[in-house]
Image 1 (spheres, rainbow, N blue to C red):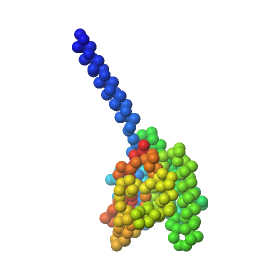
Image 2: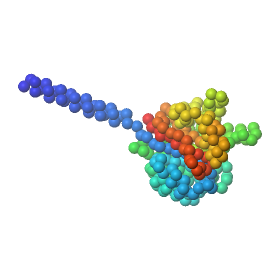
Image 3: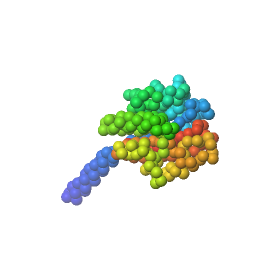
Image 4: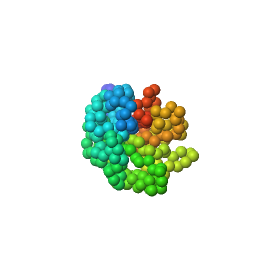
Length: 272
């Protein structure tokens, strides 16, 4: 009888341990989201359907487009990828025709906001979505390129500072993913980039660093010019708060036949 009671006690103890282990396992489960960014150069080299079919096999959850045509373009590219939800930003970048920031997603998008970078010429198209009941914000961006003269550099700096201020104001309350054409390279061993360092100072970083990808020997711009391959112009990024997000995988998509002057980039993110 004592042996039977002891055996039942052991079984009960093991069962409790397994249940507790299951609870702990449940507690450490994380939400994953596969994000991409692509400057499609107003779709002049390929249709929305062609671009969507080229990206479909990657099974992205969210794709941020820059220089996207207005109208139904994002709906069409999303349908070709199996992404049924989309948002088209209100303002075309730099006031040019058909250079909108748009977002296509597997999950419903809500809370749309156009974040002004000092004016309507450069904005960030912001939405929220949920995966596994984890809410996060997605910002589709296309930053200006300050290079012509000091006045232009100062204007670009002011716009990026304005955007970073917005991120800081919401950093405590949101999980933010920023994706698109940043028009700057991240800092490397040879030189620092002041715009990149502004993001780092507030705890954000590009996916390339955590993945250990050497960007100085890669490029995301001038994809249509083969001789420029490896020119170090990796200016399309996915940036996130490293305190809330970890990157598991990601790459620059090298297409045999480029569909834009930029290359798509992607990252598999784990939301902590």
